[in-house]
Length: 353
Length: 154
Image (cartoon, rainbow over all chains, first blue to last red; front, side, top):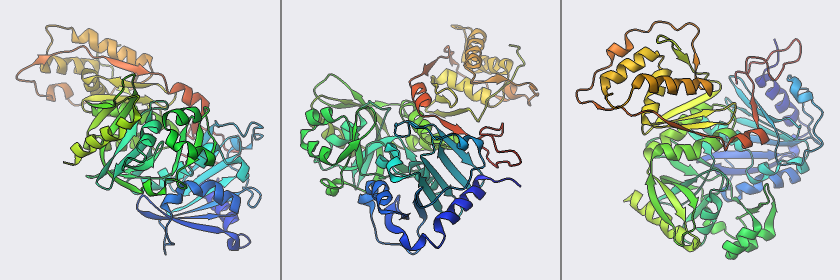
């Protein structure tokens, strides 16, 4: 009998949880998508690297978390030899680059995602609700994992609970919020960051979870945002102080945390009331116009599907189900960014009437 | 392309959804994605259901006023393009299906037949090349070491 993703996961988990490491775990607890999540790190540097993005979702410990993820580093836990030849490639010397090919493995119980350069491994046991994120060292945590930690793992786990990660930003109030969808460069981050200070709460700029059902809900995952620093200083100067607490991201952007200066404006989520497709225009004022659900799916689905591994047809259907339930609008972004929040609020008011 | 030919869609590579009368199709292998207008989306749905060209043309003639456009040419052109883009492929077996076209109700008031059309988008291809996710499949990649096997199903 050969080794499957499940048996490999079991071997990794045993190595991480063996008695020598257990007393040293740094444990943090969160409420994510309405469920308890526990993160256990083998070291402080790794905990700092991978948990800050969840700071706004911190909670007390739960007796039985829905998801427990072990965060482990190569200096403490070595991975067992893999059953897949591709993983035996000499690790790339270019490990610090942003992009990295990924390999997705799956069986009846376990999903796994391996960076082919050996920098990281994510695995989830769907039955036990236990996951593992292993990285060669805290310094080798891929940049996208620092901005949006455990995204694939949270998506797999969410999928077991009717909830999936989508490539979108979101802002709103307790009564309801909008999902902002579109490929990179469409203006999602600018639009959601322009809403800070307006009374609309921030749920994310690049990745949130959405649960389907008769009343879909948006769930915040990360209190991070990414924007080009020059654009931030020019367009949103009141947020420029966020750059003091930022890290290099891809494509010349900086990734910054909002928990330090904007914690009161961060939310765990809200009901989904509308989907908006930002478009950058040359006009002064922001406006909206209705658009078909098909156009909204075209804006949301491709980048989501290519960012997240596995269950693609199921994932596409999930997105379509959500979009069938709420109105969609193009959000034509005006150069006067102060007009964005009132425009979004008007759409939400209409949708909740 | 014979009238009786039926088609298959490689579900490991192609995902699709019909919403609001439009079809969204994504080719996971090359990053291309497609938006099909309602006439094309309707034909896509029939192809998914296993209908042959003859059955599709027959039901179009039953349901639509075809005085302004030739459905046979339009359907063949659309399917030819879908084949060229590797979204569908002729089925080697092409089994007989039970009277699909005759089972479809003819419309009492026929709407004009519109030539199906679609758009192809290629902007995700760069993303795919830079940051690909390789799915394990049963054809053996990634290769399991000798004497071992995966239970991966991609």
